[in-house]
Image (cartoon, rainbow, N blue to C red; front, top):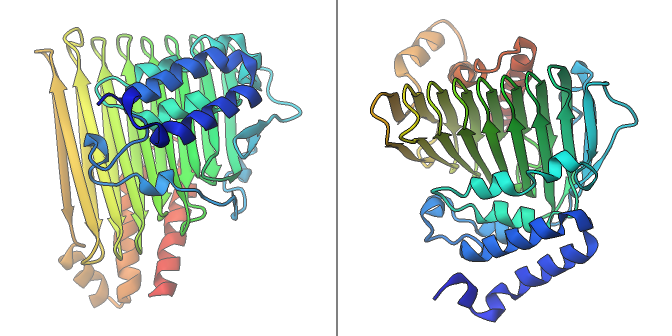
Length: 419
C-alpha cells in the first residue's frame, strides 16, 4: 500500500493541520507548503519504528502532544552582545535594529529567501527520508530570513527559542552571498521542530553553535539543518545537547562547489532515561572538498544515545577528504550507545575514514587522580569534561568554547547532586 493509500483516519490529523496552516500562514509560502505536504505523503507520512533511520530511537515522543514549554535559563550568550531574535511558539520577533550588513526579515517578506524555501529541504531527502523536515515546510506559518551583505561579516546572531509546544514548527532561512560570514547561535526550548536552510555562495562562512540544555526532563524535539556549500565555502557546526526525553539532530550538508569545508561536531550528555539521536549526512558533490564529523557522548543512568553518520562521495567528487568519528563514554551499566557509521563512495581518488568506539572511564587515569586525593566524583567529572572537550575544541572561538565548558560543568554538578 502506498503512502497516499494509507487509511484515511491515519492521515486525517496531518491533513487537518496542513489545511489550517494554509489558512493561517503567510500566503507567499503556500506553494512551497503544498509541495512539501505532497512530499511528506510520498515519504510515508510520520516516521515509524520500522523505518531504517528510526530503528534505534523510536519517534513516538516526537509525535505526542506536548504542553507549552518556556525557557528557564538566563541567556547563555549575553556576554557576546549579539543581535537577538526571539522565537515564541515558532514566530520570530525581529529586533528594532541590527548591523547594516545584516538583513533580518520574515521569510514571506524576503524574495531571496523564497528562492530556496523548501528547496534545500527537498534536496536533503536524498538517500535518507526526513519526513519531519518535510512536515515543517508544509505547516510552518512564517519564519526568519537572514542575509548578510556580500563580502561582509554579519557578526553574531542569536536565535533564542523562548517557548514552544509539540506543534511548534520554527523555520529559518540563511543566505550568505560570496565572501559573507555569520556566526549563528541557538539556545532555549526545543519542542516540535526547527528547520534551518542555509545557502552559502563562494567563500562564504557559517559558524553555527547550538545549546540544547533547557527543559531536560520533558524536552522532545527535532532540529534539522540543510546547507548547500558553494566553492570554498565553509560550514562549521557544533551542538551541545544534555538529557531530554528525546532530542534528535539531523544535518544534511551538500558540498556543491570545489574546495568546500563541512565540519560538524557534537557533545552529548545523557542521564536518567534521556534519548539523543544524532543523524549526519555529508554529501560530497564536487572535487577537492573536506568534511569532518566528531561526536563525543557521555552516558549515565539509563540514557540512550544514537549516532548515524554518513559520508557520501559522488563520482565527480575526486580528491575528497572525509573523516568521521563517534565515541561514547559509558558512565553507567544500563546506558546504551548505538552507532551506524557509513561510507558510500563512487569516486576512486579519495581519502575517507570512519570509526566508532564505546567504553568506560580509563581505570588507570581514575586511579591516578584518586591516589592524589581527588574524590571519585570529582575525578569522574574531570575525565568526562576532558573527553567531551575534544568536540568542543572544534569551535574556533575560545570564548564560545568556554561557554560550552561551563555547561558541561553545570551538568556534571547537577549529576553529582542527584547521586
